[in-house]
Length: 203
Length: 222
Image 1 (cartoon, helix red, strand yellow):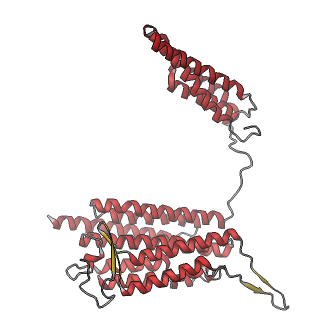
Image 2 (tube, one colour):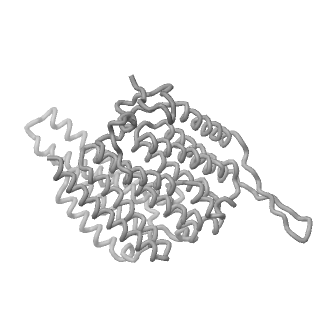
Image 3 (spheres, chains in turn green, brown):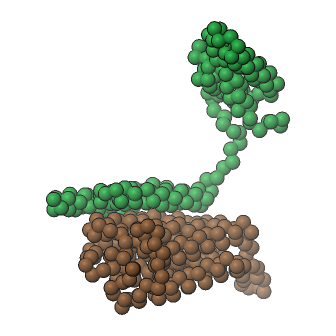
């Protein structure tokens, strides 16, 4: 019973150590600092492989700390690499890509219409995403009072629907539609506010 | 309940702290190492950083290097973290925990030196860091082979004469500790030791010395 396991283990160990040899050889040949950093990640992976070869629950539990150590080290090294190569550059303008000038109109309309079709919480989220995207792309100094007003009416819809449920249960379908519309408007309004939080002077 | 068969190397256990099946312990040998690490951690915690003096030749001008408050705080934090990791490694009664603490010492050592914004020093820290990262392979590989061949990582069982640990695992463990933060490897890179900021830089040497003594004790006892 034990003998075949040992054989498989030795075979796995042999393969792992041949991987180590290959990685070490490549690290010896490589001169670019960034590539060497990436190659050291390969070494870490092989270390995890050697732990995993044990193949018990304990080895499974030991992989996680090993992985964490590896990631911590590669993060620290990446920071040092950035620092020593002077690669730090403050962005001139936050998130400026071409699609944000051409797409927002049509994408927002599509998302808004699809959100209305879905209605309810999901619909609100989809429509809100559309509005959020629009506000995020267009530099907007919009009046947030409108969003607040919509949000207020949504509350009213909800409360009316709740009272209808309580007082006149036979009109439940009307109440469901009302509540669905209310939560749709509410979620959409909330999400669109996120799109306006871009560090403007009055936010 | 917990005592060693062979007390020739490190003496009998003075005290132990059982965390489940991980039993940390202290012997006369490790007590000395612990005191040493503790004293230097306290020194790093309370002392002010040194200010290197540069002398301009050909005149009588000299100036001291300025160490910013931010840099000092970061170095001090890293030095204390390094000291704590060293003490954890000394007290550990589990081979894998020892390996983890050693890896943490390596990361803290990188941090101590890397806080100095100097191109040459950063270049050398990068080289050293790559060495430390490679060092995790023999370190964890060694402890994994110990686990595979003996079925346990607890030093309480590994130190008994009934258990035989393969030589290759011992060797890998020692190589791992050497690569992770050992003074000979470190001193070869002169730029690192030229970095200003004693007593924090001192912590690099203290931790490596103490951990090396500890790993030798583990390997001989196994």
